Length: 96
Image (cartoon, rainbow, N blue to C red; front, side, top):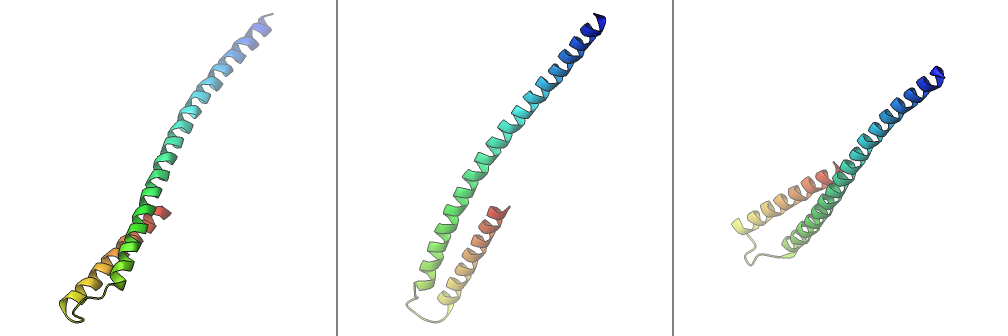
C-alpha cells in the first residue's frame, strides 16, 4: 500500500509541475498574440505610409515647375530623393 501512496504523491507532484508549465505557456501564448497584433497594426500603418509617400512621390515626378531651370528644380529632386529614402526605410521596417 505504501508503494501506491508513493506513486500517487509522485503523480500529484508531476501534475502540479505540468499545470505550472501550462500556465507559463498560456501566458507566453497570450503575450505573443499581443505582439503579433501590434506588429500587424504597425505593418498596416507602414503600408499606408508607403502608399501615401508613393502617391506624393508620383505627384512630385509629374509636376513640372513653371521655370524649368535653377533652384526650384534641384529642390524638387532633393525632395524626391528624401521621399524615396523614407519609402526605403519603411520597406526595411516591414522586412524586420
